[in-house]
Length: 219
Image (cartoon, rainbow, N blue to C red; front, top):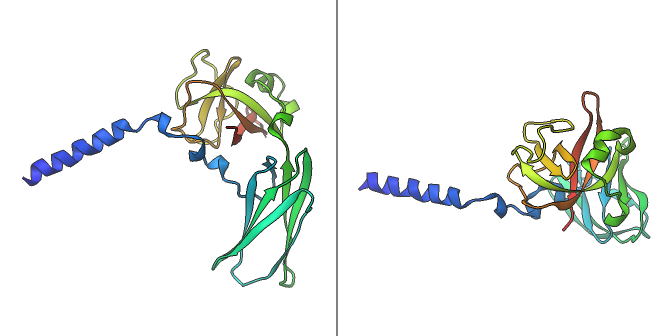
């Protein structure tokens, strides 16, 4: 009896796995939609979006927050055992560069700075993969929009060449009407049968000239 029960469980598991498809992964499954700001880089936020900063706080410090209240709204804060979290909303409607500066009340502590770039999606240049391939210096360290298909780990349909850099083993492939390229920051299970619009950041790479990182999917 135990033998048949075991076989039944195995068959049930196989059926569940078979039913899991790429289509079940949607925009919210990608980690790039997490709105946790990072230090040392420019954080892109769209008007009306909510985002947060998380500060390690092992010594029960008190913090002061300096930010432009005409561009950003502090909606709430939360104290956890080891972290302090501040939640914000971008209220600027046009392109704006700003900073959030966090200072601790502890002596000799260094202020934390978060660079924020607020921009409507349609103000970010729409380019092709060929544009980036032919003139990478024009787009290095900039945000651009792409309209392309996510292929996961599949090979491109219309070309044998994949541009850009394979940064990690989890990087995937995207393809538009002009070519294909590697992209980092995606879930390998995310695939589309049609082109979707998204924002990436083009980064420099000594070997291949550039690498592409997914920043935000546009719904």
